[in-house]
Amino acid sequence: MSKYIDKPQCQYCNKYVSDIFADTNELHAAAIAAVKKCSLFKKGQDIFHEGGQPYGIYSINSGKIKLTHAGDDGREQIIRLVKPGDLIGYKALISNEPYTATATVLEDSAVCFIPRDVFLSVLQKDTVLSLKMMKILTSELRKAEEKITHLAQKPVRERLAETLLTLKETYGLAADHQTINVMLSREEIANLVGTATESAIRLLSEFKKEKVIDLSGKKIKILEHAQLVRMANLQE
Image (cartoon, helix red, strand yellow):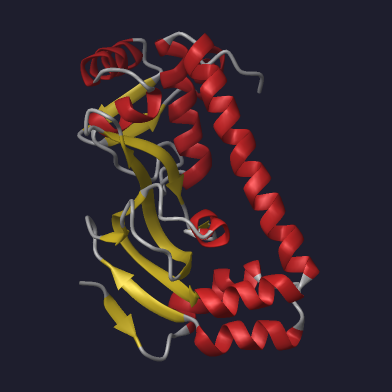
């Protein structure tokens, strides 16, 4: 079970929630602040489950989370990687439909919860927040469209290179300024790329032999960023 913090401390709760509602009317922001709750989730825990009913939205304050959807064959498909500052659960809440994905913690995370009734009430009254949510929704839709296009048109090698660059962009680099700051299994990487695990393993080995990346367990170090960009068929 998650650890619930009755009176959230700033290092857990305030930073990103205040960013999201920074331009919200003061009374509306106060209403959010009065009801938000922070929980600490351990690696491997689920925040919500596909098919479940939404009772509020979640703001990620620290940690890393994946959103997955179960395919027809029961296999997990990663549809989105989540970082601090992101909101999750809002599509199901706004559409009043069950969750279409499961949110699973990749590393220990602090997550703020805002109850459904309060959030929807503020959303209806606050045009600034409404516009911000529209931007979030349209940005996610654009990224989903781009992913579909790349899956249909790009070779697997290019998709893997692009996935590594996306992981770097999403989670940044470790203190050495080379190692991608997230550790995923080979199966999870293959899932993101849209290929078989065996293919992902083979291509990662090829990238290593070409000295574009280095591998140490689940850690991936980018040695030649410009070369990786060219391999992804992207413009710097």
